Image (cartoon, rainbow, N blue to C red; front, side, top):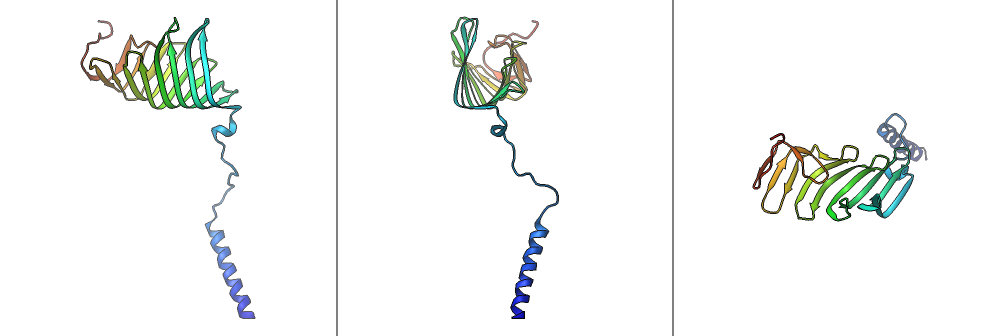
Length: 185
């Protein structure tokens, strides 16, 4: 019986040694906080209309929206936005995997496979695009591709533009087809 007890004790000590030696030092967190854990509100299948002076300017759709009151932001997932001009006519749509909307300032950032399509079928593709309401400016510091009907194709390292893409400044542009006016010319 002593041999059995000794064998059990040895096996038990070995298991204990393995467990103790595999443990890391320090305190481990009991849970990881994610966006969903800390949001003040979570909306599924969100639909939001943005108006200015009674005219629809945007229609924002998102699979999920996480609202954070302290920072006045909303994190959106699977974003689809339709934009309208000052008269309420549709101008373009934007789709992205995610985005951040700052409801205090009206600024927005779209991230992940961002595609903007104008009503004339011109298409802009990039990884990130930002809109600043106070500057009335759209910009990106990421590589983008812009294609217009008629064959104009522009690739650049980034850009700044007015919301209607009438005055565009491109960083390191490369392209073909069409014409454009250089700034201050």
